[in-house]
Length: 367
Image (cartoon, rainbow, N blue to C red; front, top):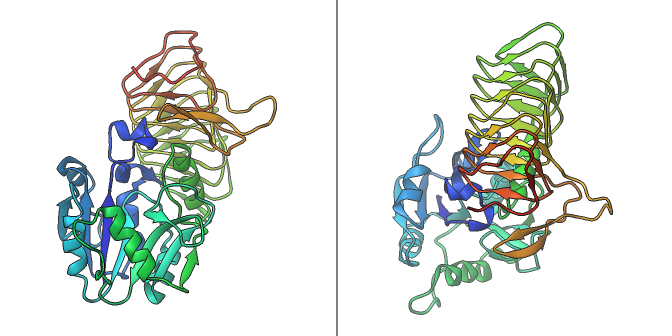
């Protein structure tokens, strides 16, 4: 069976897709593309990737030890690359997006039985609309995929919808851990899903006296946890980090490699990408912070409405209900925040921008 991963651009994941393709967004500090290669395991014996640009493809084409190598790549300026790949799948195919988050166990069931993997509660994203509502995340044919009746010059959407109509009838698998990745808060949710698979503690770095560590926690190599710090799992902290002293790392938090989270810095239910530094007393909750950001002293991400309703945020210039009662900020790569910066819930700062000391960010900063 051959796996085909589509790698389209997803602007609704901005500001993080301003500087990387969506397949390079990390879950548990591993880019989604590589995580999905690993999730496929031995389910496929060949892998094709079809992206929108050569740059996108080159930036997600790396491999981890034990993962399948990418043996075919194509640029998706039309549906021709996808059709060519499908025609070479005489022993079956699984079609999915490189940047959606897939659970290994769900993929194994799908590739054993064929059919459609659907996320019932999603209203956008994935490959296409589901046959019974929701969205299709993956399609698996155990034989050569049926391409007859497509007509001339079909679009990629036409091909996906055709496969949905011809495959998986009566074989609809509802996803519980796999999910479409469309909006910035999905980065938090995908990481939280993955954290639920942690058990026990794996500490490869050094932990000073006076540190409290509870629940499932992973601490990477050459990372130092300084005295007075409290870590409440599930939490993952990468390699070559400094945490504390007296930091508070609360549940459902993932911190990347080469980060410095300093004195009295509190993080909760958030994802921090590689290389980011916040050396002083601050609060980041229900947020995503990009790579190599510098978070000035006193930064606070506001995350709760006084009326307890779910947060609304701008996406593509339109107000969108996130469905989340707690929603923080989305801070792009290499952003620098001045001391005492306050961000309203759901606000975004585009890569490379900065705030002044005492700034109150009431709307997205895009330039």
